[in-house]
Image (cartoon, rainbow, N blue to C red; front, top):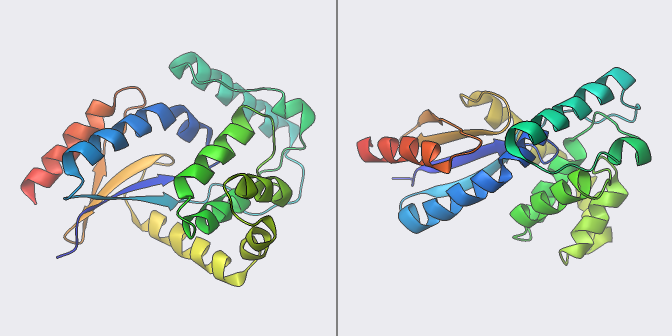
Length: 210
């Protein structure tokens, strides 16, 4: 029988995922300690915004910057608002999703998500740009030219579409979301941005009854 899997459904450029990051890290650590033999943890990119070369409309830029401010007020999350002055924002997160999938092949998936989030939210770099993503890959020891080829390959695109399709089959409420799949049944897990214990209690309850 397949081991139960906890899916973390996210997008590397989702600002609420950045806000949730410290709590998610704590939850993962606790799960590894308590359920390492019983539970697999799998990242799933949900694909927030398709490829686009068009500049982001001013109204959307203002809305997203206000979202950053709200997350900071609610969670204390740090953001570098210089991004909106020094970069040309585009509503395009699929490239960052593909970079995450490429890094997965090198065992660097979580490190790539972390690198993308830091580049975007702290260092005012644009992860919608292939050049930025390849530089981040190089910082993780992945050949940047090989990374670029993989980012642009049909195989990676198909993998992304498959992952987005799977994410949309799960009972999620946007990004980030947690879903525990066991015995062909998907259990939505309560996601609490500030208290990892809330999700842990849900997971313990599900695992106890399967």
